[in-house]
Length: 365
Length: 255
Image 1 (cartoon, rainbow over the protein chains, first blue to last red):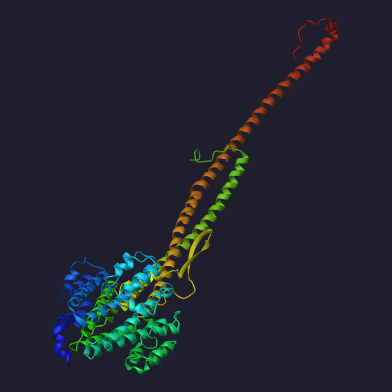
Image 2 (cartoon, rainbow over the protein chains, first blue to last red; image 1 turned 60 degrees about the vertical axis):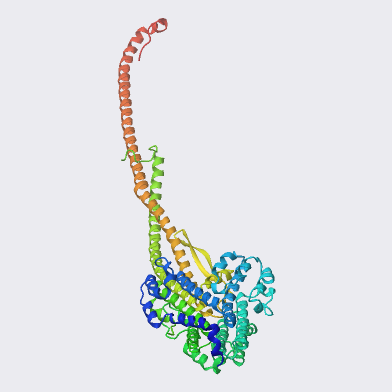
């Protein structure tokens, strides 16, 4: 535990700030108040203490999406502040955090370029956390080949493109496959980083982040498998999208790649207790597919996605029990993202008068 | 009224015949149009009822659909998903074809929705996360659009029927309140004129007959007179027979 001696010298301030931010997250009590709201204005009022300044500029009765944008603005501002104060391996670690959003942004830009959209308006839709300096340059490219040759390889994501995707693939492959390939490469790289980086190796960061990333990898594998049923994604292609680590790797992913239906997934994840319980909880439907049928879904069981989110949030919550670790930053970002989604969900439910499902959010505090 | 509200025809028997057939035609037409109007109105009421149902249904379905979109946003976790989906869609999977339905001679366009076979365009959207919600949302919206198409075809039929019913009713009323009375008036007028003519003719004939009889009577009287005088003359002739050829400058004898 030698790292504990020096951690605070470099990263103590950031960790303190993040723990402060964590305390500002909405609690069950806050959510209870939010669900009692009748209008969006009430929601805005309830969010006052937590988001104050950011919501002040909103017009009366804002749309849920603008509300979500404002809450996201706060996350971005805080993230930028921490990033500015981060040094050494923490700074690198935070860059890794942004890569996930960059992948989404790049996928968005590629989609836009494929359809010859005005890339200026695409930039507005990009996730601010995934902003990188050379991103506006992507607008210069007018076709895919140009995009790949001159622009994409300059981005921080270039290593993830390299070796797995050539520019020939870009126009033929479904953008979703590109995105998931990138994400797979990203997850593997991130996993390698937390396990091999000298400043992180052997610290609690490695322990916590390995757990988080393994969970993320497994979640993606399972989701990709379930979501690919009924699409033209072949089993070989599917297998290529599974990250090469995680608790399911290698036997579980092999079996997942052969799964033909939800039952196959269930057998594949049988070895890992957590996932098996999750699949059992969702029932045979494998993720509450019939949830919406008939509209006001009285489905008691949560969907698989919900359970994954729940699990992720619990892991993130537990990350705060460790000290001297970068993982709190990751956990905080994820928790805050979930909070934004919760707020969006609750305000959506209120705006659309669907109060009976308003409690479908995930709160861990 | 009878004076001014009639057709400008000469009161002849031929015109009477034409008018009578016209009246008959108008009555038949009136019956037919009335029946058409009733059939259309029945249909119209039915459509109104169905529009009411469809609108209520649309309200519900759209609400569910909007909510499922909220679920997608929740599951995927960012707002760009909608944009990505609109960008990925290249071909319309859900299409509409029109067909015509004939209701008492009115062609009502009816829209029929169908789905193009083949894998869905964005089948892999949200592969990493939220894919199921996306698909579910797609299904919900497909149902919503179906309802919209149904409503659209009902609304079109509603507008067209409304127009046609107005026209038909106007025609029915025109025939009932203008054409039939006018034709009847014309017939009445022609009849009265013809009667008048008849009476005139009769009177004229009577007059002519009277004149003729008078003339006849006069002639008869003349003849009688002549007869009488000729018998006198005969007597004279015998006496004056020699004078006849000799007295050429004598006045003519008036009979």
